[in-house]
Structure formats: structure tokens, C-alpha cells
Amino acid sequence: MFAKQKKIYSIIHQKCPHCHEGEFFVTRNPFDLSKVGDVLPNCSVCKRKYESEPGFYFGALYVSYGLAVGLCIAIFVAVYVLAPDTDATTTVWWVLGGLLLSAPILYAWSKILWANMFITYKGVEPVPGEDLRWLPR
Ligand SMILES: [Zn+2]
Image (cartoon, rainbow, N blue to C red; front, side, top):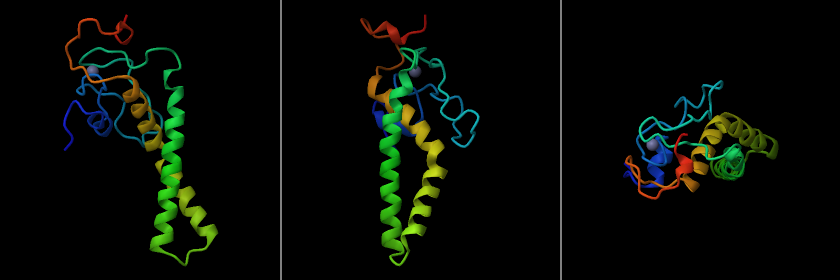
């Protein structure tokens, strides 16, 4: 559906942002709560490290916040449009329920979105002069 070499491919298929072939997460199931959002140390195909420095994924919380706010607005609008007679308390429960159910998915998406902001597609083969911080030592 989405062509390789586009960031959306890596995000939708949860693949390595660098080569779009190796897996990014330990598990692809976002509801495996013991492993949700756990990122592999490096790509199994191109061997690039996924964490360039300790705490690299702390920045993903900003992405997660943005996704959560967008989801809350979407649920609110959906409830308002589909059931306009719903009272405010019920609407809040719908929003909180949707947010709670989608939290593991948003957590995983925030990490792969964050990684895709800093890692660009370069294919499987090493590129001359590429930043070696992404390679395992
Ligand atoms: Zn890779």
C-alpha cells in the first residue's frame, strides 16, 4: 500500500526506519503489555542501532501527548456527531475509555514516529560517510 523509502511505510509496518526491512519492536502485538513499546537494540537486517544515546526515546512522550490529544478530539467529535443527545459525563467516559484502550498503540506509535524523525531511509547497505553513531559498537 505504501512504498518503501517513505517514512509512512516504516511507521505503518513497524519496520526499521533505516532499511525498512528489519523489525523495530520486540513484539508486533501492542496489547502484549509486558513488551509493548520495547524497541530492539538494533536492526536484524542492516544492524543500525535504534537508540543513538541513552534516553533517546524520552522525546517520544511529546509525540505520544500529541497523538493522545488528537485522539481525544476525534472521539469527542465522533460522539458529538453520532449521538448529539449524549450528556457531557457520558462523552467524557467515551473519551477516557477510548484513550485507555488505545494507550498501548499510541505508546508504540510514538516511539516509531520519534525514531523516524531522526533516522532517514538509506537502504540496507552502508552508505559512505554515514553517521557511525547508528552502528553497533
Ligand atoms: Zn534496518
